[in-house]
Image (cartoon, rainbow, N blue to C red; front, side, top):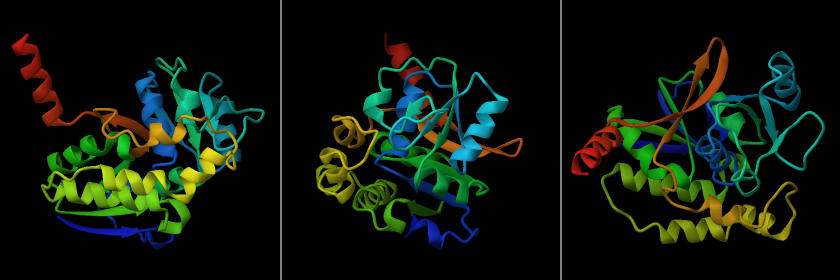
Length: 238
């Protein structure tokens, strides 16, 4: 499969199939939100937009980077989110890089959001879609974030049919400046477990697809055809 890696500034609207990567922490947090029962995640362009959406939908929960502030219910931290009860809830997510990258490619034919926690499912979703080329959008540090580049390379290997050992890629993520910032407390709204939660490979068995719904960017979990077949086989084996 042909692939390229770009930062958000290099997204030009020609991307037909895109995988937006934010390992630390937007799309690790999003995956945990779905695991904790969230129905969908609405992506906001900025904090004002997130609060405006919430004002129209008082039952929805707003989430952002950094320390908790008035109007926002959740923090962009998998460690802080993993015990939340989000069953049936809609979450509005606004982050510094991840949601910005997703909004940049939301009109692509297929746009997925990913981190290590959904890497395998993301590769399967691309294979099921018959994609022959993909643009990886590394959102952190204008496309230079070590953890996002490592995840993009790992996904690229999976798409080529390889079975790479994840440890070298996870090491790059664990030793990245972003991981160091989280461990040292330089990023507010962090939990001590965030780094390790962000480098759990295939923690979840779904991909995450973003698209426009009535003009709004919405992220939803995506189960692949191959996952569904595996579920049937497991059920029959019982």
